[in-house]
Length: 67
Image (cartoon, rainbow, N blue to C red; front, side, top):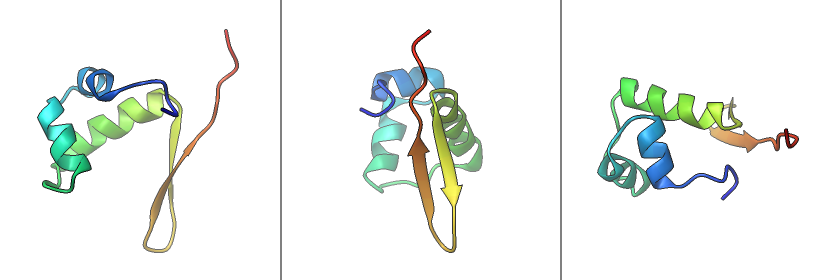
């Protein structure tokens, strides 16, 4: 795990249900914009950066120095 978080952590931080996360990960649903924004914010708070290019979106994760 790049961010040292799991699906339960993300569900709590977003907040969304684990089923929503699972269905999103498996491609069964496309969450509404508000849910996408909450998931993105939680991931960004943990250090993920979303990179948008020509027709693609990528994620970069930068390690943070220990406190």
